Length: 139
Image (cartoon, rainbow, N blue to C red):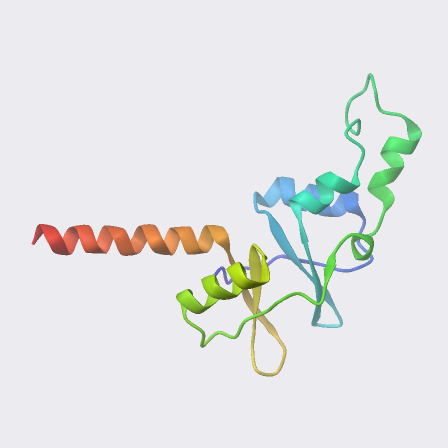
């Protein structure tokens, strides 16, 4: 689980979200409103929602640039699948596979965001486990 979660507000612009993804180098952001999780947005959601001509000085038109003015709530996945902190890595993987999602906000019993589990976190865990197995086998 990644504990350092950067969040967005539903009324943030896609320009703000795109800048955040570019600066932080991650692929999912939890959307909070009044401290409660209301959605998740991915870098793919952003890419699907803005014009491919944005940022190209030769091709960008006014209507292309205006796609960056859309709001996060217009493209986010609402009612995201979540998981509790007591659940195992295997449980998280099963939930992600069953629900066809690539991230799970980790929520406390009182509904507060604790962190996020992504496919990348699961792969890192798998690599760590494999490294431990290899070291034990070498002994």
